[in-house]
Length: 159
Image (tube, rainbow, N blue to C red; front, side, top):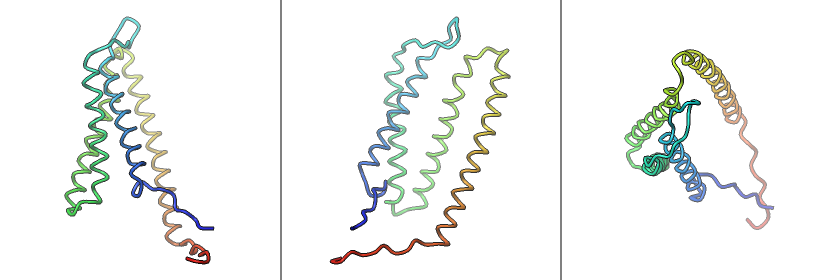
């Protein structure tokens, strides 16, 4: 019985397009949803805005462009300049994510803002600790894999 390797992002254009399409749809919806936020009597309310029709394709284009940059990094002859471009694009996406996360904070009343910011700081610390633990476990597993290579696959007759 021959073992087939599963598809990876490097080998499967279909998986790449799933990543690009889902990220583009998500970022488009996210930016469009920010345009319909409004402050009402009961707090945050949603009211339709025609800016959503502009924000959706802008968000979709940003996400698709980012992934195309990442996937083309390995195909470039100038690896260093491609890396710098992806690095700059990643920083831009990180700043965009922070801005999108912080934007709804403007709708919080000033007397509750300090409580929300304290909670946000605690959540950031907790998630940073979890991220550090995940990173540490992944590095340990990678080191173990490097130290113990897998045995060769058995070959079936006729190969």
